[in-house]
Length: 161
View 1 (tube, rainbow, N blue to C red):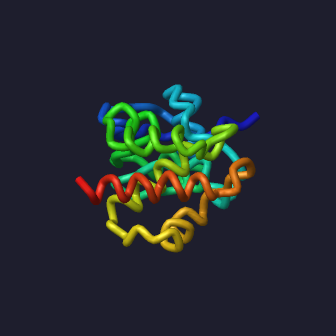
View 2 (tube, rainbow, N blue to C red; view 1 turned 120 degrees about the horizontal axis):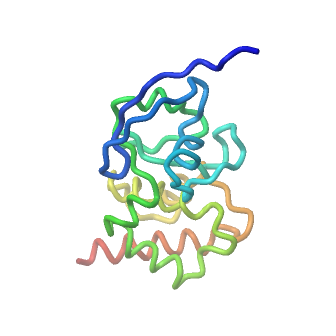
View 3 (cartoon, rainbow, N blue to C red; view 1 turned 30 degrees about the horizontal axis):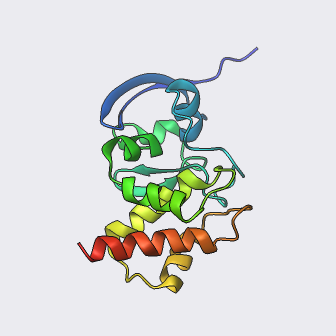
């Protein structure tokens, strides 16, 4: 019987310092879900295609199923829980509800995190740009129209402030 190799890591998750010893092959999304109880990021395809596992690492959206927890050593990680707690996406979340942009909710955290990144980079708010930016996130329920509507409406609200 062989023991799995582990490493000690230190990172900041949603503003809190975390220290843990993790298996070297454990994916970041698995660490967040199982070790920290942050279950908002979902495990979908496990190939980086669906976007359900999206989280921010050092300010950039990454696929949590493609990044190992040990690679996040020293990093700042923000999950959907952190974005929600900060209020950063409260208007977007309200618009998702208003526009019926979620049904089962499985893709929603990844969509919200990706849309927040779109807001941060300041891409012009055309429907085409929104669709292109969200194209790495799959939704099997909504057909995307309501999601694009919600993101577009939120962008327009933010620009009119």
